[in-house]
Length: 324
Image 1 (tube, one colour):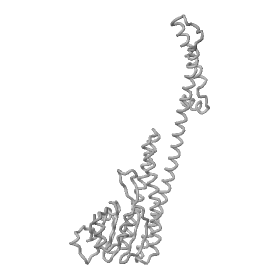
Image 2: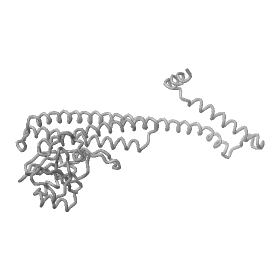
Image 3: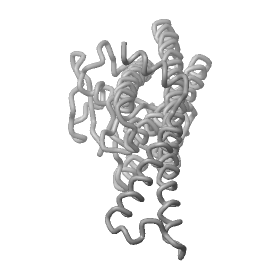
Image 4: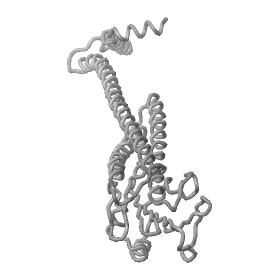
């Protein structure tokens, strides 16, 4: 889908293609492209088809390069998709400056472009393309920070659920959040390299205000990288901890099953012994013999269970605390 935007009195107005004012700058917003949209961008805007496919490649890294008649900038932006297995991930966003037109190409709808088109980003001027790109990069960093806080909130909620009962679905959620943080860390590192290149590039001219904005964006980007790294380490530690808890719970269950098996072995041994082809006591006493043998089995079971009871110091201390 391709939409066209022009700015009037600081507000973005969506216009039809045949109503575009050629004397004013135009923002071409292309998202979720079809084959027809790709052909239209190639033929109508003169964009190299290879560049379009690069932008739509989900693994493409951030970069800036010079095309034949335009300047191409690719930046990684965050995406939130509630119904996806991994709800937070990143995709590339292509920004192309060609004459009086700036073109953004993205393979999915995203909050960054929605915020700009809806007017949530203040003091953005479409006529100043370098400043427009910087504001877009700044909005991407703000969205990264917002999603990182949400990931941290979700991981804390999952941690509370795991303290009650450890189930596979909670562990899978934690693994997916871990994947999201890895995606964020990789994309933020790629964006950091792009910001460094923008300071040195001769493909675009930045004024002093733009340079100050770039410095602020680098600070925000480093902050997001630090947060992503910290949250990733915390999630890794949590996963290791709960893995140990699961292993310990399994050992406790196996211990209990072993004790039960040993307790049942004693009466089984007695009844098996009396089941051999040997003269048996109380064989002619009817119910009395059965009651005597049953009593012997019960007595040996109680004695065995008493001998196998847990006498660990830790359990004794915890029991004393409970009694207090």
